[in-house]
Length: 198
Image (cartoon, rainbow, N blue to C red; front, side, top):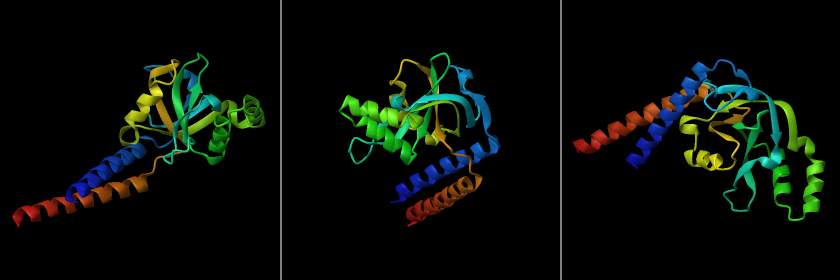
């Protein structure tokens, strides 16, 4: 139990510290034309406003629900650039978008698939739109997930990024998590010292 508490404390300190750092370095979102992103020229900031984005929902990559029902619970939508490369995935969890994707993705009849694509094309195909969100890095980046995404398209640049749609830096919650981690760490250390002394 002591080791679990220590692990939770370290995770809170890492996550809270990263959140505080992100908030301090990103007072406003950095406005970037998605077409300017190339391999080796990715943004240094973590809070981005990506403009002139072009998406095709049918190209989205997904991981199946934990319930094993074959449905997507999170989509990673590639942002296509003018030079036909991909440097960014947007994480999409909006229920209406997930519902449309799952409806189309589970069809076995091509005629029905075409029907639903035509019906929901306003959600599936978008040009010149803007996405704002935080770049996943550090504790927020799942390396296994990133490696899986890296294998999905030859158009991907080597150093692509993932942004979480509509997320913003939060000082208050980050300070709370950091403070909680410090308190749990102090409690864990005292618990270990008491055990050693007894």
